[in-house]
Length: 183
Image (cartoon, rainbow, N blue to C red; front, top):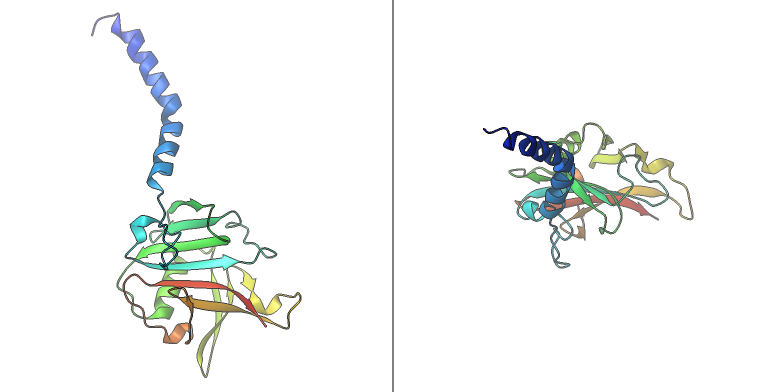
């Protein structure tokens, strides 16, 4: 290498080092594509999760989660963060990229475990199976407001589940969503 190229190479390396975070952010934003189909239970989820099993937990506006309080954080099944969908209707987290689950409770526990404790689950087992009272530190039994009571409400593929999490049978591509319901 001639002596004339050394300063140019040093400048190029310095510029590349300075621009690396900006390049990584641009690539991440470009890669973060979300399903835009209001008829699909995968609406708002990463396109790469389109055929996978997904668990979402949404928190009420007046009881936001300390970690997931700005948009919906998308977390891969290995625990890495995919990105945040700031346009999703609510705040919370979705964990996706799973496959092969048929039992709702096993999937629920494995998916929440992928968040390193951020979506820890508390439940009791009664005559009708598991009753989930706490997700991510929010115990529905402790909520107060202009209602008589609150509970964690389970949705399966966009519809209110007619069975509890212990009786949910999953197929590939299913989406489970938990949010607070009141009466």
